[in-house]
Length: 82
Picture 1 (cartoon, rainbow, N blue to C red):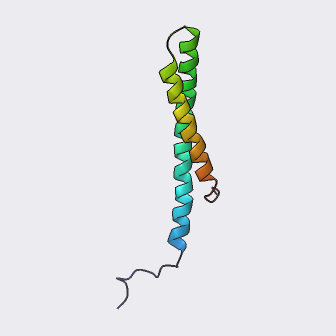
Picture 2 (picture 1 turned 180 degrees about the horizontal axis):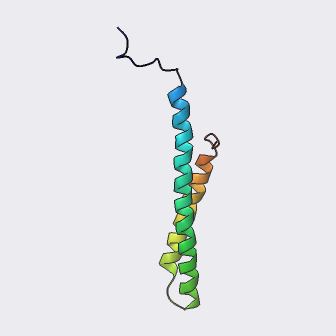
Picture 3 (picture 1 turned 45 degrees about the horizontal axis):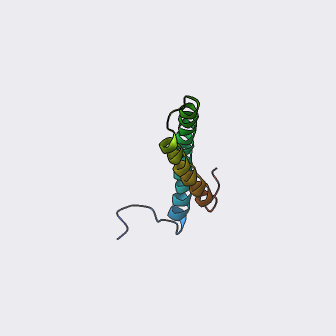
């Protein structure tokens, strides 16, 4: 008997597509973090200019930038997008 009429799978074909998709997922997360880093930068600058407390916003910006840096470093290990 065959595998319910399905065609045979090429070994390793699923792993390659999974790696490419994983790289695309990282790109989406990097874009999301970059957007929020920009928003937090604008809010932090605005809070400083208007002489309000900006410590919490600045710490949030720092955490976002560190996460962005870590994601970019992890992304470099994955294959390039096509």
